[in-house]
Amino acid sequence: MIFTREMTAEEAAGLIKDKDIIGFSGFTAAGCPKAITKELAKRAEAEHAKGNSFKVGIYTGASTGDSIDGELSRAHAIAFRSPYQSNKDMRAELNAHGAHYFDLHLSELPQYLRYGFLPRPNIAILEASDITEDGKVYLTSAVGIAPTVARLADKIFIELNAYHPKELKGIHDIYEPADPPRRREIPVYTPCDRIGVPYVQVDPNKIVGIVRTNLPNEVGAFTPLDAVTEKIGQNVAHFLSSEIKAGRIPASFLPVQSGVGNVANAVLGAMGENKDIPPFTIYTEVIQDAVVKLMKEGNVTFASGCSLTLSTQAIEDVYAHLDFFKERLLLRPQEISNNPELARRMGLISINTALEADIFGNINSTHVVGTKMMNGIGGSGDFCRNAYLSIFTTPSTAKNGQISAIVPMVSHLDHSEHSVKILITEHGVADLRGLSPIQRAELIINNCVDEEYKPLLYQYLQLGQKGHTPQNVAAALAFHDTFNKTGDMRKVDWKNYIQ
Image (cartoon, rainbow, N blue to C red; front, side, top):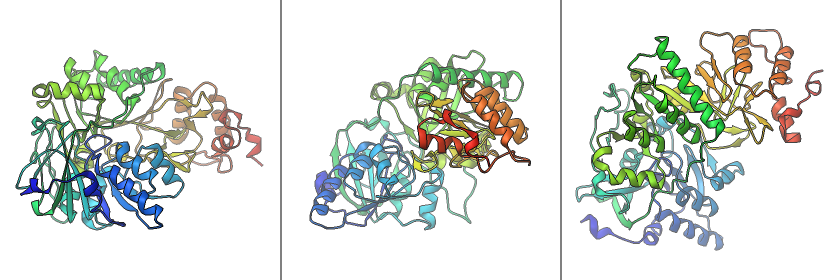
């Protein structure tokens, strides 16, 4: 009987060994386990105090709450980590090489695990709202890689979390594609299509422990919108409405994929307010607060994603009105929510946030000044290469203007100019379709760059070496070098880089 295997989080952590590899449910801080890893961190600290080794490998859907990435990082209990994170202590651990990190496109991780490209997880820890004796696990507010790690693992732990109502049953659509050479098309043609079952089926004999909890998600509050993010949102909405008027987007509109954070919330909010944009559907990875508001207003008719990454207030609103939202929400595994085949088939409008862009249209999503990992590539690459329209947004500057988000050459390349169609800042829109490198550079500088940086970037173009892309190898990273030396990119002096 499954429920005779109930135990405490401490007892469950005691069954995990040094060098074990753990796969977790969840995607962002939604749907992640929270109790066992806290006890595992304590155990690691105790073992380290005795002079013993204790580190585990970690696979997750995306980022997690502090109870996984934060607790285990502070305990120095992580041997390796993939595919995405956003915790400050985890970030410090990775950048100090205290743990190895391999950044991946989120859609790729489940199949990489099945293919044997990466070490197999021998333990799975899943957060569930309910479980049956025959091994049907009903997840909570996210899916992530749960189906794959549950199938591959030798041992499964379940955190049965009473915070999430059992009435969530039916909001999940669990489907794993076959592996090559027997993979067929994934039969999703609209965001509301269901193709799987509402639970993760596991072998009951692999469940070694059930831990009862009553813990909310650890989703932090989103940064309030400000004048810059609101202007970016308005620029995106105006651009999309102009594309409808020009006939380049169907009048009925297309499904939207939106990234994570306050800029994404601002974009969706502005789209909902724009009278030229009809009510639309969403096919994305992370469903945020703005989507809930737009659904209640009738501006979003359906949203398919991998997680409900909602503030406490928003998720409690959803749970209080499940009859309404279950008809309009669907949660899928990330290799389905982020699948390139589906992005191209449905014609997604992909809107993601850039950490840095260069004047030729290349995007850095991951590394600060080229070396320090911020979070990871996430799902942006899954979508942008295959989207009907790939849009990247970013505030034009950071740190009170000391950093320009638009530079001569990106310090780390995640998305090349071949995948990026539109770049938008608070200053304006650069439509890069059909332009040569020099045309792209001039348009980006004119439309997207902060006024203080425009002269510097035009001067850089004049220094460009002859060729199709007028790049100057000696000066290409001068903005970054100047920032490292002075803390302010505006202090760049081109004479220091040109002989």
